[in-house]
Image (cartoon, rainbow, N blue to C red; front, side):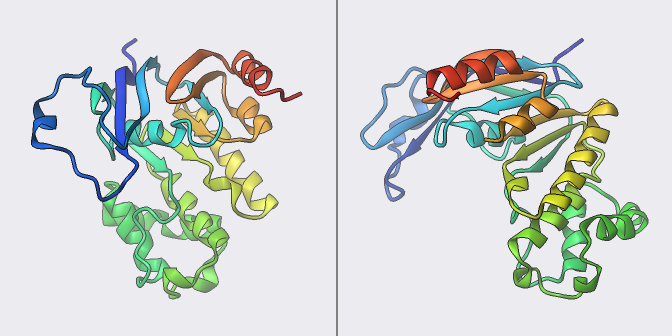
Length: 245
């Protein structure tokens, strides 16, 4: 079976100084160009394949490239080196504000965000009540999005994104915000999606959640892929490296 995600020798380079600009010669530099002043590699020489239906947990400390990897898979950023191929549609729950407009109401944002992800208006009409019911914010339909609490923003974002039919779901720590009851509700929804054969890319610092959802782990450290293997082995290696018991 062909991989649904294929990452080959991928690397992405950032500037520490946001004002710094790349030189014209950078456009023609080879893939192994030396790192310039003020630059750092968020990821480098990362390679792996993902088969349809796999549940992948991405493990590592803060600042080691986990969220950057998810953004590469979501194709919202492009690698400076290597190649990232995604053979199916992606439903990204990476940043709770992504795709939502502060001054629009909750109702308008549901239609806008779902539409941007390819849902037709008739499909949104059909699923609208289900989306709002799941998010439990029916009293705030005509409230501007900017006035919602962070927990309410997570509710509506997860509810919209999890109703997309895309085969790949990306989740990056956003469920750390919100009350326990709603979080468990979201987790049951993820369980349903996995049973339906969806592919999951899951970033979390919660070891219990990683063991619950994921069968395979990718351990990133200093932008490099250190271990790719069964999730329990990956977590044991991570805990051993950093003295966690």
